[in-house]
Image 1 (cartoon, rainbow, N blue to C red):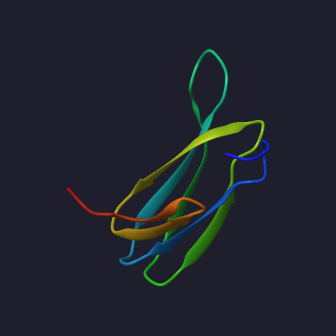
Image 2: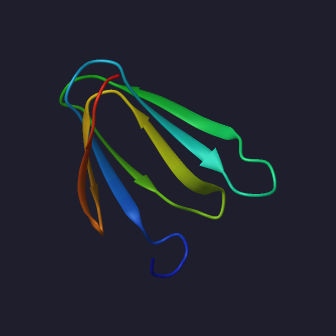
Length: 74
C-alpha cells in the first residue's frame, strides 16, 4: 500500500442487502461502521487511521488498487 489513508476500494452490490462493515485498528479489532447496499448501489470506502479492514457480505464486485474480486453468498 502507499501512504496510510490514501487507498480506496469501490464496492458495487450485485444484489439487495450487501453488508459493508468497517473494522478498527488497535489491539482489539472492533466493528465501527456498517452500511447495507441494494443492487446497483456503489460505495467508495477508504482505509484510514481508524479503519484497518473492510468486510463485505453478500454478492458484490470489489475494485481495489490491486485488482478486482467478487464476493458471493454462502
